[in-house]
Length: 149
Image (cartoon, rainbow, N blue to C red):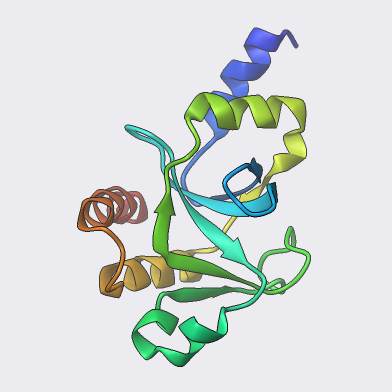
């Protein structure tokens, strides 16, 4: 497969609800992190996956409700139980950035999350007191449509 064919294949198969492992220069220190792709257009929007819930978030009921459990029992591609943080959307990556990372290592595409978790994410986004309204509306419109199809 040529690079062009590989790029086209990756572009056609990067979809919302996929867990990706991407190199994040915006973290301290910069490192590979699991992120959940929740929207592609006009630009990719992702949610951060964390191993633990920060103690401050645990202590605030309204923030704790924005953390969705991602169980290793239901998602074989995870090394351990994790949490999807629905408080903040990351728009750092372009689709081309994601494709380039996947072209160099196709194991960066980890797998899709199940429907129960998808519904929990939609609910967490709806009630998030800190997620920017513009992102909330865009995400909910796209994800609700995907769930109905």
